[in-house]
Amino acid sequence: MIKEVISFYYTLTDKDQKVIDASTQGHPLVFMTQSSQIISGLESVLIQMGPNEKKKVTVSAKDAYGSYNEKLVYKAHRSKLPKAQLQIGDVFEAGNGQQSFPVSVTGINKDEVTLDGNHPLAGQDLTFEVEIVQKRPATVAHVAHGHVHGNGGCHH
Image (cartoon, rainbow, N blue to C red):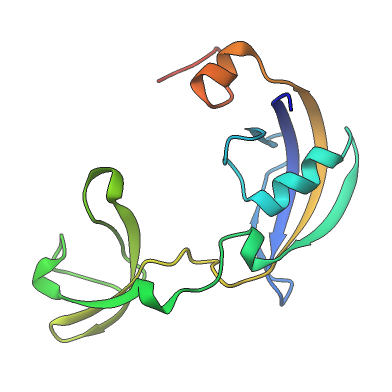
């Protein structure tokens, strides 16, 4: 399958129809297919759509950020964290190098801190309203670098 570059507008809502995120008019999200740049459940729908097509789709948790995993919630001593002043919602990198992953502070009890390694949207079905702006084949440079280049080329 040939990789494509897809530009699209989106509005993401939760089960209560509360807007979680949205692209802004004039600034569509641009990604390259088959590159794990967006959730698989949404990518599979966008691949099937044509330019200017609009659709509302619900992506199941398993095809979005996965099921909520209780094993990714654990407690740590406050002294093990990178800063002394903590707040619920703070995010840190846990692990080392390529084995690192983000964790969120979800509880603070004196010297014990509860950390959650789940994505904030894990376990949730997500509803997207999408509109395809453009679809085109990915260039050799896009494929070689593994991502789409912005205006003016590659800046890394």
